[in-house]
Image 1 (tube, rainbow, N blue to C red):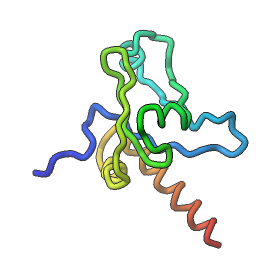
Image 2: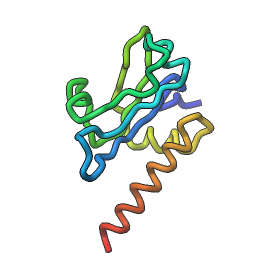
Image 3: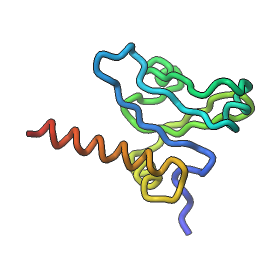
Image 4: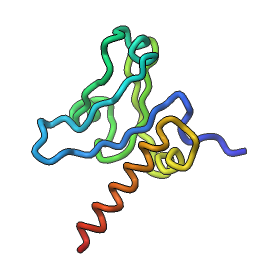
Length: 113
């Protein structure tokens, strides 16, 4: 059996800049367990922008995985194929991945018309 492209402990994300936004791309929404691991039960989301991703040597235009470990936010770049793999699986973040792929496909179609 082939190894998983993205382990179950990683949550996938593919951020999209919002028009007229404040520069932040999106929020990483934390579960109660992730918030406790992060060290603050009241933190429910972490804001992310291009600069944060670039500091971690991640391409803001590509998908990435993230997790909270020992109170720290860990991030790693993943391939588009790995992101698609998640969308096809039975994972907590698979519905999100499916919606992102659908939204990107619709934007490409609208942009080509």
